Length: 158
Image (cartoon, rainbow, N blue to C red; front, side, top):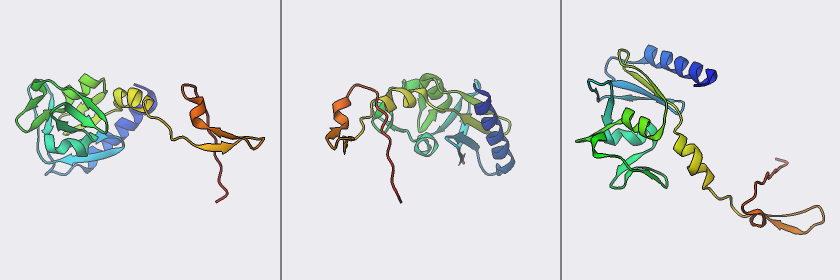
């Protein structure tokens, strides 16, 4: 874990610990936000089980027949990661290579970025085809550079 990420996580965990109210079952830190959950379960191994209905609020995923899905990505999940209406969030994090820290005594869990979402998800995006004139006034389309790395610099006067 990079020093900057560690310091951010520790400061966020300290903030969440200080603001955690007695009614909340747990606080989940993800993507620079804190989500207070009323019902969670921590099993003997220390795994965090959350309600399936809370998953979209936590990390944007939702449970579908094909797995845990967010946007156009679905990650297959084994049956052991689900138990009734609960979902094993720490097992999911381990499955996708996501780093996390936990303070079960304070009821705070912090989750880092999901590598799967950063890699293939962003690499598969296709930029919209734009057309701009070059220095000689000839039209140039972004699609002419498909498969090559391109830096497109724009400027506006407003």
